[in-house]
Amino acid sequence: MNSTEPDRRDFLKAGTGLLTGVLVSGLPAAMLVPGRAWALELKALSSSEGQALLMMARTIAPHDKLDDAAYAVVVDSLDADAARDPAALTGTRAGIASLGPVFAKASEADRIDVLRRIEQGPFFQAIRGRTLQVLYATPMAYALFGFEGEAFTKGGYFNRGFGSLRWLPEVPLEASGPLPGAK
Image (cartoon, rainbow, N blue to C red; front, top):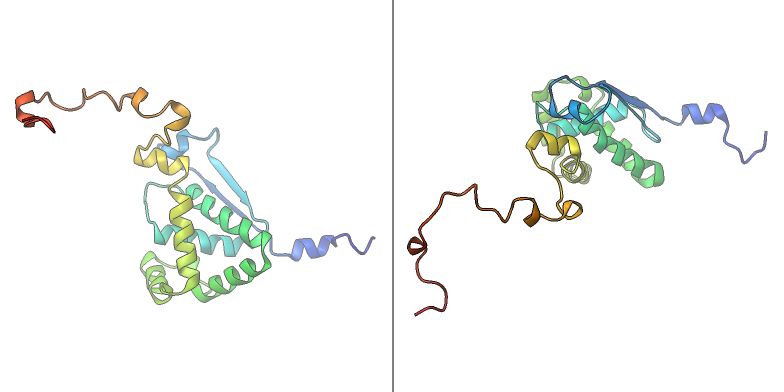
């Protein structure tokens, strides 16, 4: 074996993991994907680390009707950073360790207590920021909240009904007051 090639055993010990789940029928996210099962291969983090981050993201931004698959997108983003940057991996692992070994399986109330203790720290703030940035930019969240997404690629808002005031009641012109600049 060439000494520059990675050893297969080292690769398997490297902490790569897998997150899996099943989308609940009837939720908006279930209509966006062809199948109900999902899996996320982690490149740097272990399965238990990924699960802890998923539950952290879910606790920071709790939405009962939003499937774990949407929160897995946040974990994927964090895992990609950890795979690219050894310092990010070290910091993420230290932060996950600060949550405690049973964080992912703890009740929501217990997870909230843990997060309150660390909420001023850089790890919590980094995960909170990434959760808000990534979670609410997913089509699954869009579907849940009724947001149609950005309008630029669809011709803008004006040509898609925004310029139509059919959704407002008719108001007589005199109820509007004088026009600006009119005397």
